[in-house]
Length: 183
Image 1 (cartoon, rainbow, N blue to C red):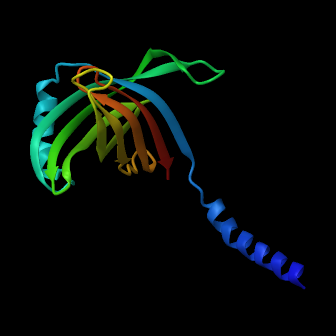
Image 2 (image 1 turned 60 degrees about the vertical axis):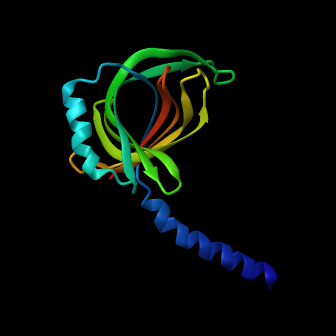
């Protein structure tokens, strides 16, 4: 009797999951290396000033940082994933803005990005946690960033997320995983 009840429970759970599985959206995943292209153009400086009004992180903006970046494909060693070439081919760009925001808990880096990768335009907001100061170089901050990708029905994008392992400062650059979820 116990086996029959267990079997019925398993079948009931499977029946509930089946409709959810059928509704799963297709996804595309990109892994890219970003690097600072330097010299933000006047349009990016103006965009960052305009976006200050939309910063979702509550607090006082201490500094606005225009981030003119390029996205590059990279090559890893198949046996263990060690990055062997960080800049194989330029695959996109990012006009981004960093906002150092004083909050009740300290300083947070709010992040806006308007990026292009593989012919897709991705826009969204996020934050960076940069807990490591002084590594890999004395003037650097190292940590992680995460951004939500806005839905864009014209491109068929339901949403997405971008996450990174980032260095800001003297050696600005990040390794990003970009997950685009399709409608």
